[in-house]
Image (cartoon, rainbow over all chains, first blue to last red; front, side, top):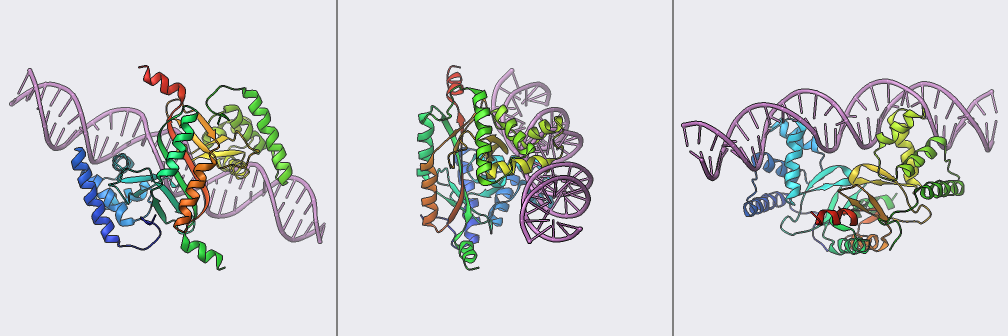
Length: 161
Length: 161
DNA sequence: CTTGATATGTTATCCTGTAACTCACTACAA
DNA sequence: TTGTAGTGAGTTACAGGATAACATATCAAG
């Protein structure tokens, strides 16, 4: 598993390919990637980290693209529904998806020190939860898995103290 | 797995045993189960469902046990730190732990229809996440696993439509 | 008696999220 | 052309969630 872990990578490429993937997906589903929606995705791709809805809204506001909370929430909801961004429940925040093409229920690794977030495909964990739920007759529609701890860099610097 | 699933069970017993377990745990750890903390736990045990901090606060207020948010949050934080209540990230809410004696990182099954929540011990899912994290050098401290869907009863009545 | 630890009280503020209503735009049919 | 249905966006107003910062109280140890 080395997809989108904590290693450095080319930012600009993320942004470009993220937008391209969004266009493709929306075209395929006949969903509208409107200016607001597109810009919200772009903001998250540029930020390359989890951002609160109000932080996103500040950007929109500065650009005259909408100034009230519902504008941001609707765009974020649309993007989340189409798997282009993810909501991090633990942080009440949103982050651009790093692998929009793959149908996935990702696991997030959240560093409590530097707030970096890695999105890892962990189909096995999800499957285990589904199986356990099935045993008690629960019908799972969505699984949230979020791990909090220390990323490699922060873990090291903490140990060095 | 039949611990605390969606079957009916004796409420009063939950409350009694929950408080008893809390007393034992606090005594053992020399932690103080003060009136406010005790009452907050009792409120959650009586409610027997996830409750927002402000809903808990309303109860405290009505009983003259504190009227400002920090009072509720401090009590909830204390109880959560001692494994007596759990925070449901998805709902920004709290629920009394159903098996306080067992050291656990539970999985929650949340019914989107009736809001019932089942706490299931699912050590395997947590272990899978930890293993996956280890592969990218991430040091996990806490894992949140929350599944949303339909409980047996709601799933059936939806299918019957 | 005083010092430190722990718990509580209070104010003020900030962040997160949504209901409800309005308007603009497009497509499509009468 | 006119009507109407659907979708997206704009706005107001508010509900709900969370915490910083400072003040107070209590109690046990030195």
